[in-house]
Length: 492
Image (cartoon, rainbow, N blue to C red; front, top):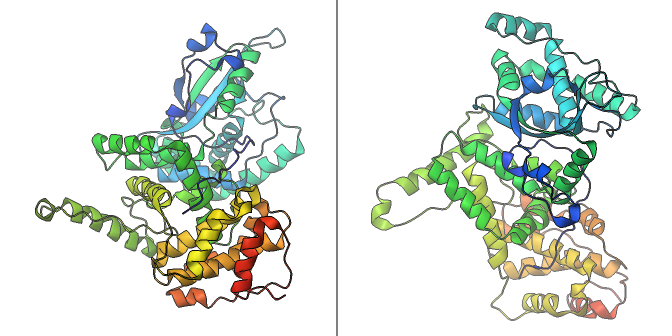
């Protein structure tokens, strides 16, 4: 049975990301230990504003106490991709900006200092600057009759930190290259239909306490919440409200612990490892791995046709009047390494694998080494150590990937082969960390890549796994060692 005990520690690193759902802004009374239960917070009223209002706000300022600008090229490209993807939508929400309304005597006029949201605000300013400095785009705006004011960046993009300067320079150059894909309609969407949630606080300590309490309570930090918002937006134009409500209810009814475990310990790792990429902690920076193609947008890419055909065929089959007679239902044939289909298929895919992981009991009918392996893995003395849980997760992921592709065909051989490969790292290492199994998954033989490329089970079984000359002796793993000896994978 898949190991239910391996849980990830939450990632504590704060990194601003594009937020896509107003529901992540929770203005409910805060916990007692934050000392923020005052009526001031109950009176906070978020305001939805357009980027035109944000970027051309003369009072907007990024204060000197803010940390350096650290957005990467990936962050910038993700934002630009989303703008281009959603430009036909009535609106697109980019997250929350928390201001401190600074009217202290040191200031000659009231300014709105950004306390939270400076990373994306700087990036948005860079996009606006690139649009302003592009003569071709300016001509398109003129022909379309769109009036965009001139930016005043005197106080907004003044930095002394070299890291900020370098990142701004690199990101601006990338934006200049990317905005050649913009037209007047896209620019109009950017300024007038892209939105942020604006929260203004008049006291600086309140602003920072609010910011810290939002982070402490996990608000806008959960990757699966961001994915939920993204894929719900994908459903807006081609699903009914009833269908969307049903999707949300199904998502919310899934046990949060199982949902997080499905993403962090299985889907994220299998999808990364089979592509030869590291997969240690699933964070907001990794959510693009669960974004894919939209079945309702006609991308000019031949590879997308097979997914679009299967998507509409399944829908057409289930809606056909003959289903009223035979009462059959066709499920979408999900695969762990498939291109994600945005919208409802994403939610169906996650529900499918949450259920699969929860219910999958790997059993074999025949007496033999495979049955012995499964019994030992569930009973050996060291199985509850953190390192052993990581190794068990490695074994579970590889076996789950095999079964997802080939079912139970030659399952005994698969269990034996994956066991030897996975538990080699346990017998050869004194201590096993998450980094240990992550690095091991990417070394030769690359089991996940092999399964991905295999067309039949024998393609997988032909991979050579080396026998061991020496092992780390431990009473905790003696039963594991005995299985290796029985299978002649240890030369003594």
